[in-house]
Length: 332
Image 1: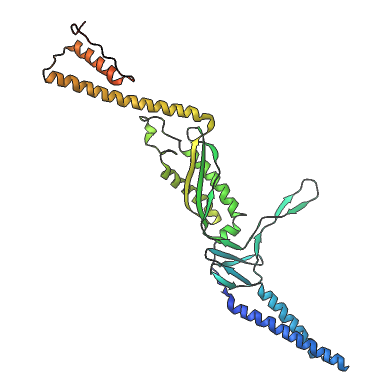
Image 2: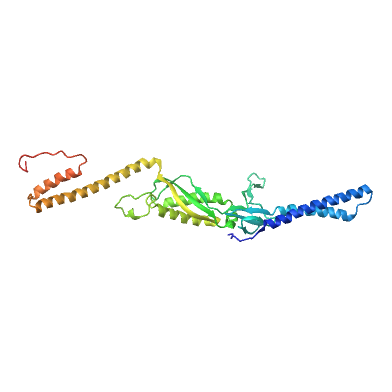
């Protein structure tokens, strides 16, 4: 695996002065030499060898200035340049501003795709991926698409995520993967599918043993942290560091959404009924106890059963109870 090496580039302002001076010198030398040669021709005299030498030197200086001009580049904050000299990684420049480096450093990084044909014509070369040697190290956001996956219980769900990432090692990003941006996109989808299959969408029942386990809906922070760890493990190969990972969408798939909604509604009704019954029982017990303790009414077991039944109907019924006045005895 590649490891980033720090490289330094000279200030571009000093080299700009040198290159401009070479351009001016070569042009002036060329003009003077051309004028001298024209003077010798007008006088009918042979041109001295040193004149041709001066003309050649002016051309050489001009070509040298053009080559040196190819070494200028500028970096903004949050940018880095990967320096490759004839296929060998030299280092990464992170110094911002106008810089000058070896003009023979590669301007772009790429690789050729080699494919073996099956028609008997031998090996064919295709155009491979290529990207510039200047890499952004700023934080980027990847808003993933909605994926349909199965959770731990096998239920089809729709899930999506957004991650914030940046290039931490430019050497790995440039040489250990073919295209680090596509690599980040594909590995994000893979990691999201893996995390979604590890956890269930929601708890099954309140009294179930799994009610304390981590679920996708109830434990967003824990699931996001697990997703971040999975992405860090996968993307470290490409020199990418994940700053944050969050779920942006979570829902049952449309084909089971209605069934799951009815199940959730049933669970809510059961939970509400449970609370109502618990409250009604406590109220009946309190009413019978206070009536007996205060000596207002003396109940035998049959009377307690009738009173409890009437109170439970009144307290647990969905509609208002219609009172019936008894003008006879308690048992009529």
